[in-house]
Image (cartoon, rainbow, N blue to C red; front, side, top):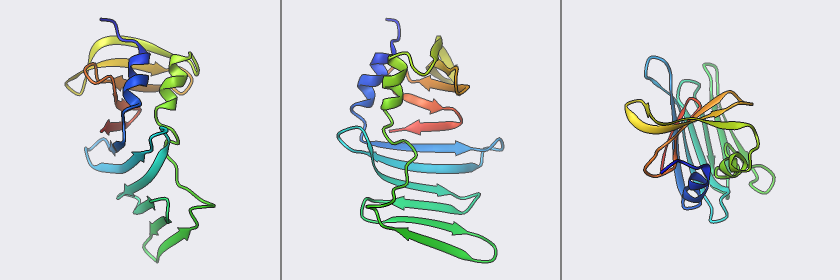
Length: 151
C-alpha cells in the first residue's frame, strides 16, 4: 500500500524514547541526544552529549544542567527547571502533524528507496531543505537531516 504521512503521525503517538545521533564525514560521533516523550507527545527529559565540542546537557525536569568544557576552564551551569528547559524537539510528533496538514511545505519524494542500505520512504522539507527518511515497516523516521533516529 502507498505510504501516507498520517501513518507516521499515528506511529509517533506511541513513542516514549528517542535516541538521536549525528556522525561527521569520517564516521566519528559528532552529537548524541536522548529524549523521553511524555504521554502528551512533548519532550519530558532530555540529555545531550556532544563530544567534539565537549558540551553536555541534562534536563530531568528537576534540574537543568549545561556543561561546557574548554581548554582553560570547565563550566557547569545549573538552571531552575521552572524557569529554564533545554529543548531540541518540543513535541517531536508535531512536526509530522504539520506535514500531514500540508505545512510547512513537505513532499514525498520517493517511496521504497534505500537509506544506508535499508528500505525507506524519502520525504523532502522544501522550506528547510531537509531530507527525512521513514522506515516503511514501523512508519517512524529513521533520519531527519543529518541526524539518525532510533526508538
